[in-house]
Length: 201
Image 1: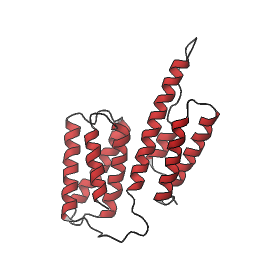
Image 2: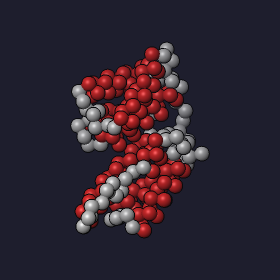
Image 3: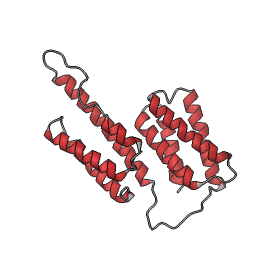
Image 4: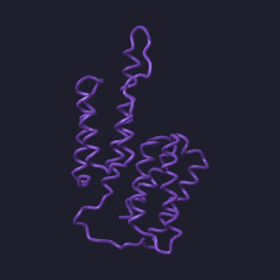
């Protein structure tokens, strides 16, 4: 069973702080990577995409050439460091959307204002897709994002749109877009999804 969200956020933030201090793929890096994988395994469900994305993250060049490879090694490490930072920050954002255990219960169904928020989000997603703002997403991430939007659309077609289904779809969509787009041109849709996720508790 995953850790409580608040504890998970604290541990992942520690891994982020440690990542800032790393300068290469030496012994400290190997220890950090093991700790981070263990943290994510204990913080997230076993099927969460962040686990597989972190495990295959590349930190060194695909190929080496004769002579000095220090420049390409540094570039690859910094690229991996940036990707890992974005992924861990997205996971923290997703976990922070989880309600505290002592939070008072809310309605099982979405209210009218929340339905309107989801409708606006879906329209913005499709508009961003048509205008090419989602092009920086890789094939897998784009398919994941589209699947989460399908879930949201199915709930809006239902006479009883359920909060328990909409909330995780929104959190997942926010994480996928934040990791895949970041500060790219499509970051506007990231903010829209994040705001909707904050509204629907």
